[in-house]
Image (cartoon, rainbow, N blue to C red):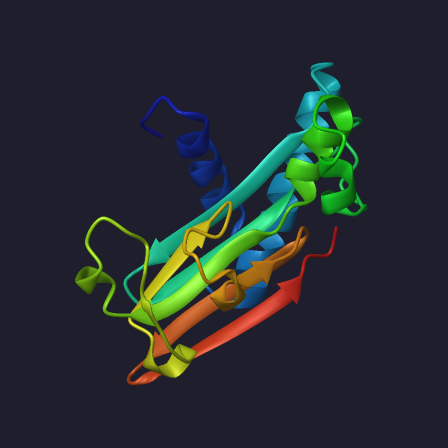
Length: 171
């Protein structure tokens, strides 16, 4: 392993947990990684909320994951992030940030919209670009797909076709 950041370490850890590049094995690797993180923070008595919104990108594949653990290291966190956000501060506000969706926009001609995140929104099979974000970055928020807390999304391009699969993580 080379590098100095937490994400570089997590990337190496994830790669060590993945048995193959199938969607199921990648999902299982993410699930195991979260379990190891929670186990380590409990063992080190560093239990605190952990938000992990991650996208892995390869030339013909993108995988995005929205997960983490709560204030006590629990991984089966539930709640209405919009209601929790209203508190404006403290543990409920932090929990709302954990539970908030990760946002995804697909389309084409991204390069035509300099200095913005606009894109020509289109179906997955016509898309040439994807944007993952912690909040919608364009004025038309209805175009953004919500990747809910505890979900994984996998895009893959094979020839002219793009597939999208959204799955619930087994946590």
